[in-house]
Length: 417
Ligand code: UD1
Image 1 (tube, rainbow, N blue to C red):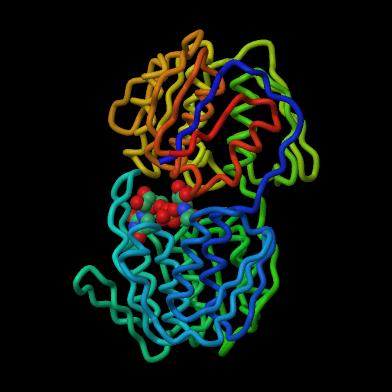
Image 2 (cartoon, rainbow, N blue to C red):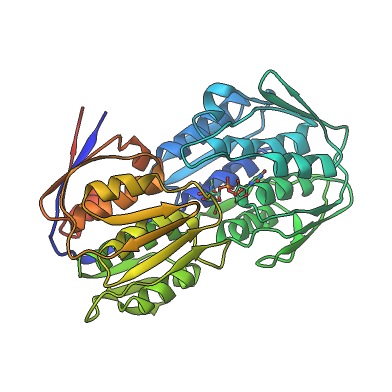
């Protein structure tokens, strides 16, 4: 297994271009199963999760060709409606094929995703949405079997906000007969981008960017050509890298409006931020102040930046309180950060971070995607050498992270196993 070796303490400088969003691309890839024919997606990041989803689509009979940062997905010959355990267990987002398969073919067999490193992650809301649309659901031998003659428009009221369940409900409802309302829908930019692609395919959806979506079902959709939105979590991770190392950098090819909650917190912490249409310049301030965060659905502070922001708070002046409301157990990075001499305690879903003057390099282990990013950030700021094992997690969600950091001047090397 590869690992990263980082010599910390270097300042970063220059600019970094943000790749296409993983979390926007995954549902859009599944949506390409809805029409017959070839859809083309541009600005697709080179990531293991994308390769995995391509694999899931191929299993259904779709043809997926990839060149440069483009994917061509031809769903003309889809004839197998199953997402098997071997794939779903490796990537939860495989559940996204359920809505499209059910909507187009009237059946889907998808393995239960099970737990993952960031805790128990149920799929009951996905199933609730499919049932509301008229599907019959059976659970058998670890598989979800969903069947229907023709999906029927319905009122779907979610008890809580789920990105995945909103996406799946949308992808099923666009081909249902009649009208569907999704209440308490997720408003994440990745949902907005899915709505744009579905609309380009001929779907009729209103309410984009609100928590109430209206869908008028259509009988068929056409393939679409679309470009993926920039990855707001990658952009946020680079901004925090600069903040941690007291550096000035420019983050380009990003959408500042997708990062409002993070930018507000960085300003509160004393950083200087300048935004333009598609770029953000971050400069150090006179001091780094401790600030509190609470993770909540968009547009509030994203759980996917919690670990990285906690790393920043490790070096802030004062104490900060970090409350995780989306995945209450998402604190695996805490023990690893403490190995680097951070001072963090956790009680239930709240982490209390006592700022320390320095972190010091050590051997640590990546446990999930965003926790790995947090450790890389900590390594960049720590004195001495940090070795991070199990970095396959980071390759799932950050394209060329070490090359991008090297271009900014960081001393980070991948040591091949
Ligand atoms: C997506 C993102 C992930 C991000 C998360 C929250 C992708 C591929 N992944 O994950 O990076 O951290 O949104 O922003 O886009 N829940 C249920 N029942 C369900 C579904 C969800 O109780 O059927 C709960 C979850 O346990 C969690 C909350 O709802 O507490 C939000 O999860 P959700 O938004 O569904 O996360 P994902 O879509 O899996």
